[in-house]
Image: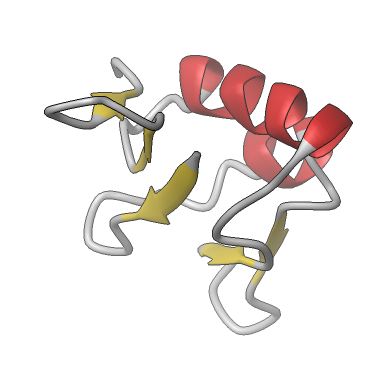
Length: 75
């Protein structure tokens, strides 16, 4: 799995950092997402999937092995 974030879409809600703190953090300056681990594994991967699913702005996406296109959160 590969996790990506679109900073232009991010609104700094922080749901990602709360849901998957081992994968995401927030910038101190503006609250926008910081991807800490692009290729999470194990429990972090499951947390990342949940974070992508609940991102209110649609800024997060992930690609699973064998995927042709990104799975993106739906705002």
